[in-house]
Length: 151
Image (cartoon, rainbow, N blue to C red; front, side):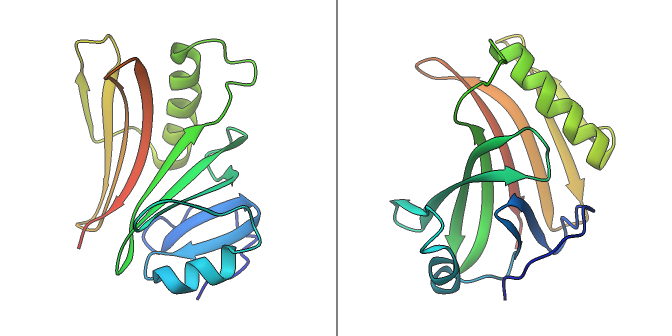
């Protein structure tokens, strides 16, 4: 069940805290429950089993797009900027997210330098959660912040 949670502590093992709208989304939330709760909160179905909402997260970097991927229950949450709001390039954006992640979760467990000049960071939480933060290049640079639940 989704519920309001005013606790600022990130309980990543249990789910994802959204600061605006204020809500805690447990990993075991099924797709139908998610759709019902978010139907009046600017939720968009992007693709089969993939939804997007606009909000603010525990990562404290203002409003962003929050993508939710389902595989029976939530499998992955992806966070991306809609606008850079004063962050005029990928370097500043990457550093802002990275600083926020390190403040919340400590130093990453894995760091690998990539050919595009950015590092690929990973945090592991037991055998169940991985946070990945990186910039990839396809058609242009894309910053990715993904929180994945491993079954």
